[in-house]
View (cartoon, rainbow, N blue to C red):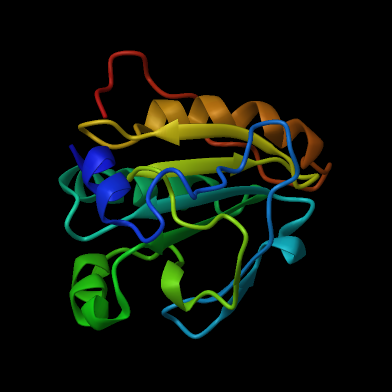
Amino acid sequence: LCALAAALLLPGGVAGAAVPRIGRRAPALIVREFNGRRFDLARERGRVVVVSFGATWCSPCHAEMPVLQTFYRRFQGHGVALIALSIDRAASLTRVRQALRGYTYPAALARRARVDGFGEPLAVPMTYVIDAHGVIRARLLGGLSGTTLRQLDAAVRPLLAAVRRPDDRALPAGLAPRTRY
């Protein structure tokens, strides 16, 4: 439902959207995070980057937020960067900030990006996983319950081999098979 609503409500609709493709270089992205820091995807080369699109009006996006938080806490010191981009309008900034209260991962309004080659996502929640060389390796659609920790782990963990250095801390243990996310 969120995917259809996003496609119908976004400027330009689906027909005008240029979807970043798996196996291709990630487009440019420069945005000011809510904490005031500047996120520049080009400066993240050498790290695996997760770019997650969501919105406050999307219930699967809300379900995905704790998953992003858990993922961020587990992997932030292991060569992984994450940026969550809200596609809400700038007028909804207060609502976006309230929704993000208690979460520590970097986030920004997509509409405030100085450069955004990703454009409007075709659906939300939608997450891109970009390897250490700047190539898109996965696009995860959250469906009715948002992207799961297992999906993120499966997309990111194999890419970390190109990031690992001898002095890195050990990666977090694999996910327990019976744990539900």
